[in-house]
Image 1 (spheres, rainbow, N blue to C red):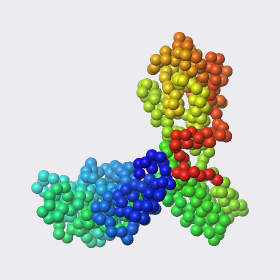
Image 2: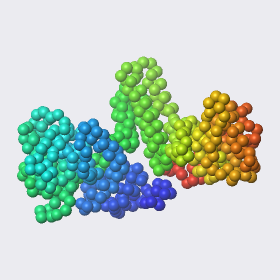
Image 3: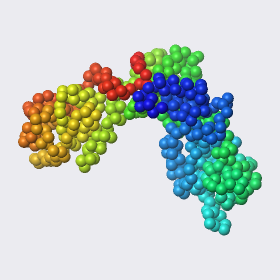
Image 4: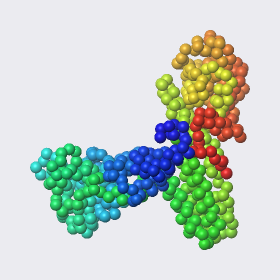
Length: 530
């Protein structure tokens, strides 16, 4: 698995997945392989299969592995839930996929969730995710003769009367917290009360971490990961992505919107309906073909979603204002759909930002320099750096503060870097310089000075004064901004060559060549954008 991920061999990984699905569908690593392929429908089908005799332990492991990609979004959702409800500090753990699936199924049987603070709060948040009305109760029972409880949320008879109520807690030891919650519910006319515990119910006479049923009310329906239904776990996986608004979940909802709209429009505007479907199909085909392992692809995908959602909103506004009834409007919007580019021009800049931005910030921080600057045109700036690197410079001399934003380019291109910082000065004040490295090493070397722009030329003059005793063999100048931001006449003549971040028709091709040289791929498999 790691080998395929390292070389980004999606075709090879697909073959592994197909073999495991056919021959070893209960293999613990299968969900990881499908996740690597972003085969979410494959995960859904696997977890929904009823023709396989999963052992309970193996199936639980497969579910946990499949739901691993939801860790971050689920954690964020729970934290937001706790903050919004101003709850006490939550304790207890989450069984990730098991809890998500079990509580989703229980939400179809019960009407109201009552998480017991503090141990049941996280599971209560999951219940809320599955659209269960949630009322939190805070109970203090530990080392008390008489448990005390209070509602964290305002409650009324309407919340519980004739409702099936599900309590949540991490475990039960003496059962005092649960008994108190049940007694508080008795002032309402509930239909029934159940409880879901994070820790499995212990067998009678067993010891260890778990839930003890003695001390719990006899009428209580008890659930835990051991006996809760795992039915339709695959559906829960997909729905959780949508509800947690992961990138895949939002992509799925956006595609569904277009398909549903196309169906609604089919009779009145058949050509527009076809254009809506074709537009969504092409956009999401590109979305799915992008290589998720490449830094910046998430941002590129966000841009695709932004484009799709923007056009969907335009379409809905046209419908709302009955614009399609006007002559030519439907045809005009259809042409817009058909001519919208599959990827924004210069989308490679998102990849470059993601690949180098943090390193540029760290380069300044290591020298205790504040640099708020980031390259305005990363694609042009990187290609200019690559062009300069091919000219055989021995060292890149980074001039801070702005120059630190470009240092990662040159380090990645295999050029040694040294650095100085020349901050801006006030009017009629002399420039100062701080040297971070031994500039004597530049003697007899071909040195490329890395800056952002040239205005008065004072920064470069100060640098030349500092370099004079060290006698570099040759000086070149790299400027990370385009020509329109430069005062070219103010570049000192000692710089033999200047490299500017200029846009070009071959910029995308040049950057793709660089990625290929590093065995990096924008797409999972080779494709042509049309």
